Amino acid sequence: MDKKPKVHIFLAHASEDKEQVRELHRKLQHEGYCPWLDEEKLLPGQLWREEIPKAIKGSDFFIACLSEQSVAKKGYVQKEFRLALNYCAERPKEDIYIIPLKLNECHIP
Picture: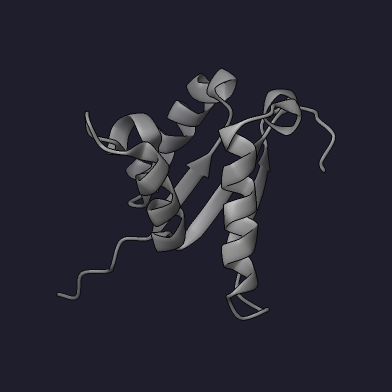
């Protein structure tokens, strides 16, 4: 029996949206995907500023969880969005990599 390779999905989000993203994480796991969520994947003592870019680049998909908080917030979530856009620019044009997901009504930048 052939075992399907796991599909790795990075979940970028604002900390204010953590509960909704935890639920998304649970649902993706239940469906057999391998979602990357900081509080689940980062180990104590790991250098998160190094691990997050590696996880973004190693993911098959990047889900940008968009909300009033994430689009207006300054900080690392914006850097994650930019890292994904830069990585996406290196991929073939027809590849689907970034998947926007609106968590609530918000202005999409």
